[in-house]
Image (tube, rainbow, N blue to C red; front, side):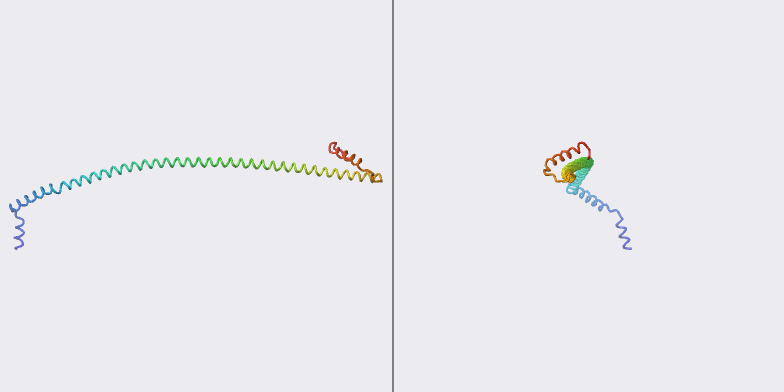
Length: 175
């Protein structure tokens, strides 16, 4: 039972104890308000200002990031447009270069063909000249055999035959 008496004694109101508890509490509150609450409140206010500043900085950073993102999008669009124009210009330049190469190739082919034709004409003229000489020699030989004797001086007859052979291409006659 002694434990019960002790428990009942604790539950009883004792005016002296209540008074000293209130005095101690008020003294503690006054002491804390002078010594601890002002620094604590100052720290809380400073922390609140820091949080507000951080929030404002975050908002400014977000706005700056949005602005930079829009700027980057604009630059990207401009770069795409510029690259498309560069590709278009490169294709146009390539087409011009191709046309120039085709034109140059055609010109070279025409020049080569003209040179070949000129060479053919030159070779043809040489062949005709050689053929005329051979024809003149054969004509002299045939005439000499037909006459039955060698011509003593084939020079004048040669000139006559050469004139006759020269006239052949102009008149178109054979004979």
